[in-house]
Image 1 (cartoon, helix red, strand yellow):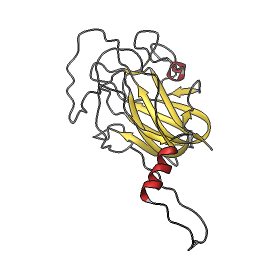
Image 2 (image 1 turned 120 degrees about the horizontal axis):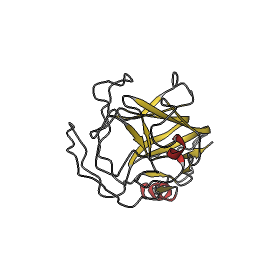
Image 3 (image 1 turned 135 degrees about the vertical axis):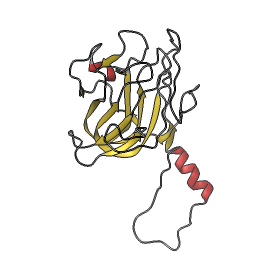
Image 4 (image 1 turned 30 degrees about the vertical axis):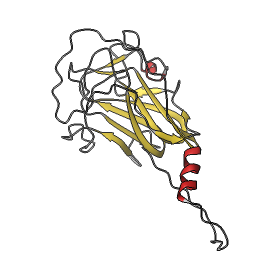
Length: 226
């Protein structure tokens, strides 16, 4: 859960009454909301494959919860997506921000094997509060080297903030990460971006426990435009 600090500027007025802890907590609660989104229906196919990964998270059985400022809005809908694979094997990069999170064919984009990335341009810098990801939920699987970065530099050479990284052995060469691998479900993966200012969101993956290819159904970026 995110926390937020509120401070007053200027000289201290000795006659002012200090707010009680209860009052301060109430003020914060009125300025924050639980982030929600549309969760797709359950749709599984095929025989489940064994998932052998160290330190795997417990499989999600409900939608994750993150508290964000009440002004937070979906910023990524319909925004332009580029990637390391210009010609996906299946689907189009535009699927990633089209708002459709269903699991079957026609709803996901498949990229080449090996380390691949996709990048969302929000058109302008914003305070990014959360990134919500659906790679593929037609079957239970976990993706390797999931890395999510934010920056105002479209080349991601300067001012890069990493908000998630489960590349434990630095095979993607962006630095070792300590986040845990997770199993794909219809609830997606919700990542706290801690109100980081950025225009671009870049997401990496490096195949999965069922195959070498990389997939995305939807990525939602939530935040506040300055």
